[in-house]
Structure formats: C-alpha cells, structure tokens
Image 1: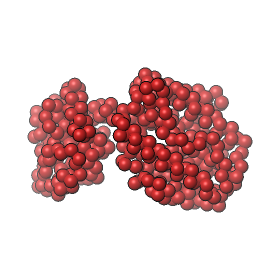
Image 2: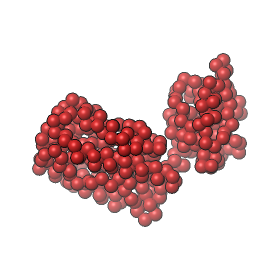
Image 3: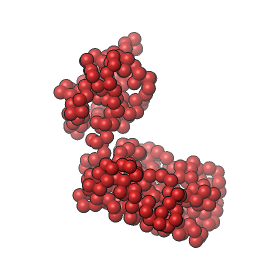
Image 4: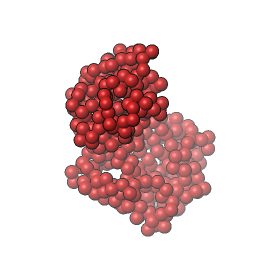
Length: 362
C-alpha cells in the first residue's frame, strides 16, 4: 500500500509542476516508489509516472518474471523484446509531451534515447519531484535507519575491544566489514581507516600501514540494513593520544555538539553547518574543516538534505542526516565525529549512541 500511495503522490506532484511524466530508471528513486531494485543495465527498465493515469513499468521481456515477483504492490508492466525500441515504447505511454522529469542517476545512453523519442520535450531532473518526498522519512523508514545505526554502534563497541596496535589499516577495514555483516547488515558500503597522518585524508582508503602506539585513527564505516543505510565516524587513539590530538578531538566534539543543538524544525540547513564551523574557526582550525557538516541519508548514503553553507532548505520533522565536523592537519593527524540524527517536533535525536569522547584502545 505504501508504494501505491507514493506513486499517487508522485503523479500529483508532477501535475503541480506542469510535467507530463516522471521517468525513473533503476536507482534509489525506483526502490522508493516501487520496492523494485534491478541493476542498471544497457537494457532499459523505466517506470513511467503520469498525472491522472496509472503508472507503468517498462521492462525487458527477459526480466518480466523478476519484476512481477519483486513488486509488493502490483503495477502494470509493459515488456519489450530484444528487437523492440524501448524508448519508443516509453514515448507511446507518455504521448505528446511538453516536459518530463528524468532520474538523476539515469544513464546517458537512456536519457539520449528517451529525448530522441520524446521529440523535443523539455527534460528536468526527477529530484525536483522526488527529493521533497524522500527527504522526510516515515515511521518505517525511521525504524530501519535506527536499526542500521544501532548495528553500526555495536560494530564500534566491538572493534575498540580488539587489539589494534600491530595490525594494518587494511586488516581493521576488513574486520569492520565482517562485523557489519555479523551484526545485522546485509551489505558493506565502505570502511575508512585512517591512522596517524593518514587520518588527515577524509576519504582515505585503508592501506598496509601498520598501526602503532600513539596513533590517532579515524574510523568511518557503514552499509545497508533493510535497504537503509548506516554511516558513523569515530576517532580513537592507540595507547596514548598526543596532546595535539586530544585538543583537536575536543574541538571537533564541541563543534558536533553545537551543531546538534542548532537543529530545530524551521531552521535552515546551513545554520547547522554554521554552528559547527564557528566552533572550529574560533579554535583556529577554520581552514582545516574542508567539507560540509553533513548529508542526508536513507536509501542512499548521500541524499538530501545537505548540511552546507548556501542551503537554505528548512529542516522538517522526519529529515535524517549526518553531523560530521572534522579537522585535518596534513601530514600529522585528523579527527572526525559523525552521528546520524533525525529531526523531531522539538529538536533532534541521535540515532547513533556510541561514545563520542576520545577512546583510548590497545
């Protein structure tokens, strides 16, 4: 039933926007609207959402059985054979069109084929219609995000109980992935393990660098549970943190706390970024905070809303996003703390509960 309601809402939003159709190829948008999650391939799969008409899912004939068995709420299928023109089939369903919206993640080959068959119809991004729907999570989505976050929390608790000195970044990354799967995730999305000077690279890929006493380590990892994503960062120290690492970590912790306290319904997203950034700037590290404060999360690891300067989108109950300020001193060290939070009617609540103080491990 929820997919039927989402499709109805999408059709109504398309009509309000003056669109003749919303065309959705394999992506998180397709999962959100139908629950169907086929891989993006050279054969066109395309959901056609039209104002006032029932949706139609265009699929390759050989994938029709898979689509039929995967859809929780039945949708009309239009299957095309290997010698058919699937773009012409979509165009026939849309009819004479002035404007359509296409998936942000649509392959260029499909976009060009559709534009050719739609004969000059203006194309827009489907996110103009779908992002406002997806950005506010319903009760079931919030439940899945909370489960994913708590599973990631437990991974953190487990990893800090293990001896890290003498292991390599790559070995810790593999262990994080194994723990994610062991503790409930169906998919490992990423594992960032940056030790010592490597912690100054926010998207560092784990290497064979050996972890040694005195190292600070940025751990950033996540995956999918029930299709919804986790994403957590913590900075830990091995044996004994340096005075500088302890100081930098405390500045980051205070920045994250200040950002969390700035979250209320009606507050522009950029104000949360500003709250974190002011703390780091006042501590003298403003030019070492080199990324946005946060990103939305749900079916995708990164989605709306983005917590960054210039985004005046107001926060609404049900929005979920990360708060992850960081400081990166090239060649020396780095620190980042990240939680997933949900906007509530009177502020926000953290979905992650793992400790945010500087943990010292073996």
